[in-house]
Amino acid sequence: MPMKGALLIFRLAGIRVYLHFTWFIVAALEVTRFAHRYQNPIWAALEYCALFGVVLMHEFGHALACRQTGGQADTIVLWPLGGIAFVKPPARPGAYLWSIAAGPLVNVVLFPLFTLFAFVLTKLHWKTVHPDFYQFVLTVWFMNAGSLFFNLIPVYPLDGGQILRGLLWLKVGPIRSLKAASIIGFGGAILFALWAIAWRSIWLGILAFFIFAQAQAGWRAAQNLAIESEDTARREAAISPPPIPEQQR
Image 1: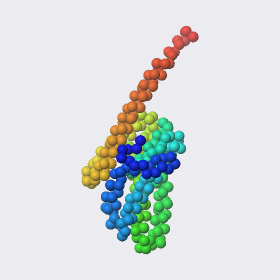
Image 2 (image 1 turned 60 degrees about the horizontal axis):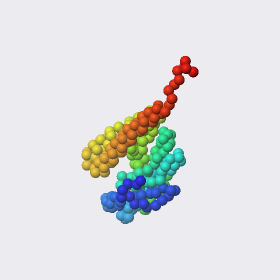
Image 3 (image 1 turned 90 degrees about the horizontal axis):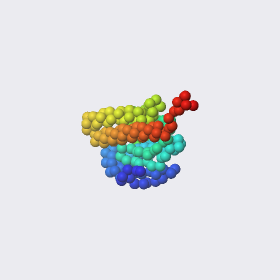
Image 4 (image 1 turned 120 degrees about the vertical axis):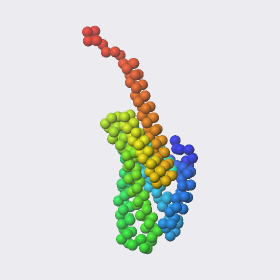
């Protein structure tokens, strides 16, 4: 289910895309903040929309990869901190890893395309001929690269942290890997909080809170998985007949 306050904006390939109402508030603030980059301020609005265009493609990468593995993925929510694809891949480490890694892979594919486009515009001297469009393309290039590197930070629940969890899953199983990833998430939240204080950034503070909340949810999910695993083991032991002694056979 999408988060409260999210508005359905369209459907594509059976996936519902929602936009949280706070997006519009932050958009107005950010567009006003960065309008000075352009001669025509409309490009600042296009820049903000382009950022979320990149985010949306990233989230569709997660959703479509999850479906490819046989999992469920039918909802994407865009909000001021980025996007969330609600995916439920099969309980296999390979399926989990592919569902998570496909998001950053979209940015990897976009990177050479944006790089080539920016290179061509530079050679054509668009920096002086069409400065607003040139600035827009460069900014989109930086946003895609920034999104890629940020998401690969190995802190749960960022993609890098979830990829780390998938790799650990291959070695120690789903429960211990989720616990380990959650602990790393707690540590990452503390670092982001300290960074927010040092830079006096409200956005880094919100991000730190989000990471902490998701790490806490991951820890609780790991505990629930452990309880379910113990209950299943007890039921199997209860219905299994005792072994017959060799002398009675």
